[in-house]
Amino acid sequence: MQKFIFSILFATLIFSCESQTVDEEMSTEAMIQAEATGSFNCINEQADKPITLTEANSKMAGEWQLKAIMTMIPSNEVPNIVLKIDKDLAVSVYIAGKKQHDDQLSIATEAGNVFKGIVLQSSRNQFSNGDFNFLYGNLRVCDKEMLIDNGMAFDAPAYFFRKK
Image 1 (cartoon, rainbow, N blue to C red):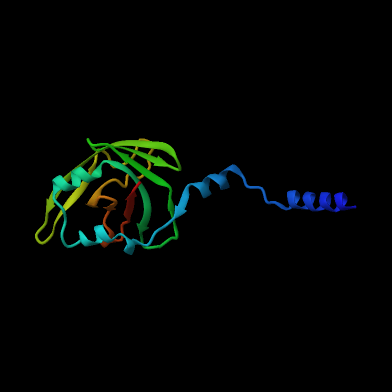
Image 2 (image 1 turned 90 degrees about the vertical axis):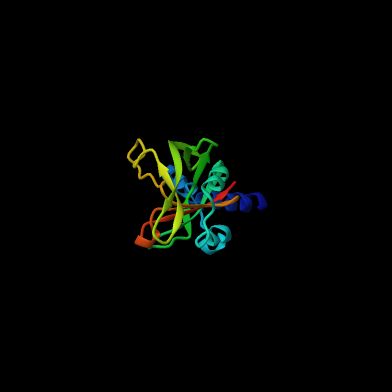
């Protein structure tokens, strides 16, 4: 009798589980929990006092995980994007663990009338497959934090990364 009850319970558990399609699994794996943008203390401090071009260049190399995006519509999840940047500023973009794009970056100092900042520049406006290239704009970079601002003052996104 116990075997019969156990068999019924086991069968019920197996058949009651929902199956997921491959697309659902991939979309879940492609997203990670977002962090609050206020937790990026170092890059928030650079808003009033940017670092030098030499300092920024020395901090860029490494693996950077996207942790937050500042947009008009906030979200608790962000795409699972990792940037691998070498010392010459060549970058590989990984989405959900798969290499998607390669690019060459450069950084320069932009002097405005009031604010002097560092600007990230990309070798192209779109990636080879037509995807939007977000690797441009105002740059703030610390030892463990990086912000790529596509123009958040004009409602464009800003991307917050942490070094892995």
